[in-house]
Image (cartoon, rainbow, N blue to C red; front, side, top):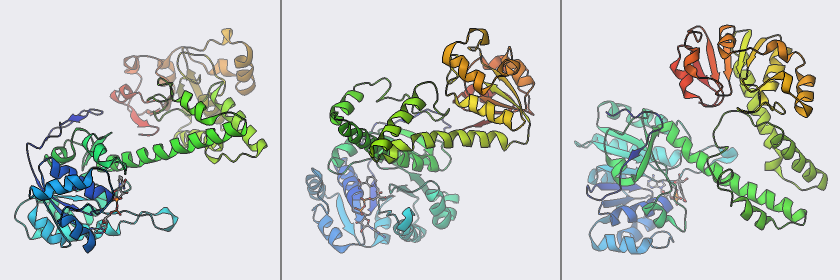
Length: 452
Ligand SMILES: NC(=O)c1ccc[n+]([C@@H]2O[C@H](COP(=O)([O-])OP(=O)(O)OC[C@H]3O[C@@H](n4cnc5c(N)ncnc54)[C@H](O)[C@@H]3O)[C@@H](O)[C@H]2O)c1
């Protein structure tokens, strides 16, 4: 088995050079499109569904759903003899070496995910595999909460997996109805989840759904799907709320969002999309508060925008809980300003961390190479005088001094070379990485990330 270094991706170009016999469970939007597109690539497809009408349509190459381009693919597959369908799941498994599970995963009342269809299909597939001599591969395509794949594998396939008779991958689907055929042929993202996050032991997931696959553990792959859908939902909500507020103020909200999207460096980019420090500084908290405050006064209901500050407070609170959950009293902060390479401490989350810890009787040491108290002026100086009048006594000359004198180190900025800490970052110490600084893991102390 190949072990992938963290953050690498596997590049496999989609090719029909290796054709597979594939059963597809669930002939709805995802299953029918997957069937048509895989058949186009030369694979042999057996569709399986509990609805006789869908199976009947499929059997004669008629699309069970309205989706541009799909019916001609199914017709072509039918003519080529690469398409059949059945209501008998066991038969579908017997005819194929790979099963792709595309059944619905609806929400129950209160949002709980209903895995009944997935579990029914798993029970059928597991029973049918026990009657087979050949190994079988299962690709879960249905959207399922993190932990679901491991749960159903444990429930239905544990012994088969242990015996090497079944391989299971979680491959989330990202297609959009209406452009699903195009999205399948040119996917925006390809993710393959394996039981341990290492490269798949067999090639079917990459042969069939490949292109450029990011490999994660099952739970990571499941979480990526939710992160994507949440992000889409969040963007729609954001654009609508900015649009509503703009209109209320007599501004063209569509034009505003169009201009916002023209900034591909800070807005439509990876920037600000790394979990880590709570936001701070002299602008974001002030401006978020100002627009939300105006909306409240004007009676414009903007629930998403209104909770952005709450979200930031919750993140800060969870960082504080992470620190105080450790049974220690001496805490060192690497970085105090709201970000690296500035001495601006206005609205800095780490100032709040220091203030709170001091208030609770902790011993706090701080290293921030950008802060020179003799050079602080104006609002920055006034805020630090108000919040931490004794800051001078807490500031250290070097990161080594802070690490030496602390039991827990909170690293929020890359403010020195990690190598310089090798002597002082001893095994008894703990470091909390707030900002994604992987080199910190190379030292012998106990490492923990704030979101990883
Ligand atoms: N629709 C989308 O755009 C989309 C995109 C990405 C992911 N997804 C996810 O993919 C999954 C499927 O979505 P969909 O929109 O295709 O659902 P759908 O409701 O259109 O189709 C599901 C199909 O599964 C069949 N089914 C139910 N139980 C079965 C069983 N025991 N055996 C065989 N077939 C069975 C149903 O009869 C139905 O035809 C869901 O988890 C969904 O969240 C959907």
